[in-house]
Length: 98
Length: 227
Image (tube, rainbow over all chains, first blue to last red; front, side):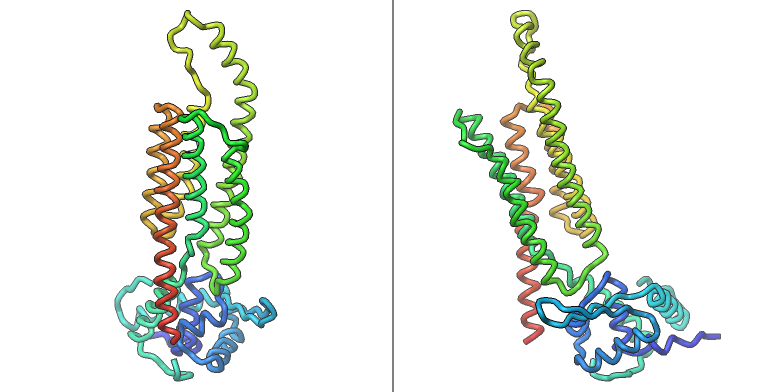
């Protein structure tokens, strides 16, 4: 019996954000926007959703008088991502190294 | 990525994960300026000291003081680069500690060598005086054994950085430092200084230039993407 894929991660932009954050220690909002080719508004909404479920930490601060948003994946986020990849592998029925 | 809640197939999900991980990996580019600077300074210092010995002149100051002066621009470059970076990798933290540790080791090595020399210098002088005409080999020079120690130390962080960042020129540069360290044990001071210059060039200057070139290409690509 297949396990349901995590609905939070099974969405294009949120999965893209988590995949970027899993590879780095922390990243600025502008970096995520640039790499995902998304709009600021859409990205903000998806980041908020990821934050609400505790998958990422969001820190807002000022840098050279400009607001700066820094995102960082949490331990819960890492576990959810790993589970998501495992579930995907089960669906596809083959082992894929990520 | 325009669709806000676009659902993906399992295959698309895995492709997206792989793409994003590669994109993240591809975003770490060192400007190479610091590496170029240190490579140039150590090469210049070694060659100037070699010229001093070979041509028998003396500069009014110790040329190696340049390495101390270079700490100021290095701090400036590091702060500037960190400010400009939009992303911090896990490697960054380890690399910072590795090179900070290297700096501390170099400082301690200089301190230890100076202390040994302060104690050993007069003894060597006395030994040479007493053994004149009695023993063939009285040309022991402590300074001949200093370069291998520095080269040994230069190789370590360079090799680790090259391996961790999968940057082969630096990896080979680190190995070159160790090879030169072994050769320097058996060579006279002048050759040691040449080996130090060669090591600094292969370990830092050349990889730094390559890094800077890659960084410029990356910046150009980014500029084109953002048009």
